[in-house]
Length: 197
Image (cartoon, rainbow, N blue to C red; front, side):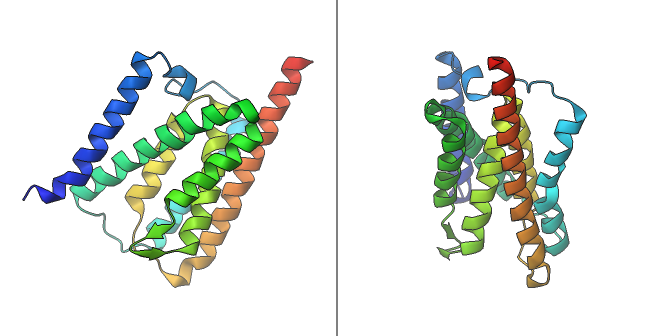
C-alpha cells in the first residue's frame, strides 16, 4: 500500500531539501526564488504563446484528469525541475553568457526527458528542448522561477494521451516556445545594452 507514495514522497523531500538549502545559504533570490520583476503588458503578451501546449493537452488529451496522487507527482516534478534546471543550473551557466546558459540548460532538460513511458520519444525531446529555451528566457526576463513554474504545472496537470489528429498543434507549440525563448533573449540583450549605455 505504501508503494504509490514512494515517488511523490521522494519528490517532496528532494524539493524541500533543495529549496531549504538554497534559502539557508542565502541563494534563494540568486536562483529566482523571488517575486517576478515588473514589466510592461506589451512585453508580457508574447508569453501567452506558452499556454499553447495546455490548449493542446485539453483538446487532444483523454479528457479526464489523473488521480490526485499523479497530480501530486507531476506538480512536485515540475517544481523540482524548475528549481534544478531554471534555478540552479541556468544561473550557474550565466557566467558564460545568457544565450549559452539558456541553450545548455534547455539541452540538459531535454536529455532528462529522453525516455518517455519506457522508450525514446523524439517529440518529447524536441518539445522539452523548446520548453527549456522558453522557460529559461522567461525566468531570466522575469527574474523569477514562478512564471515558468506556473506554466510547467499547467502543462503537466493537463497532459493526457496524445491524439495524432492534433499533432500539428505540437509543432505550433514548439515553434511558439522557440519564438518566446528568442524574444526573451532579445529583451535581455536590450536591457543589458540600455544599462551599459
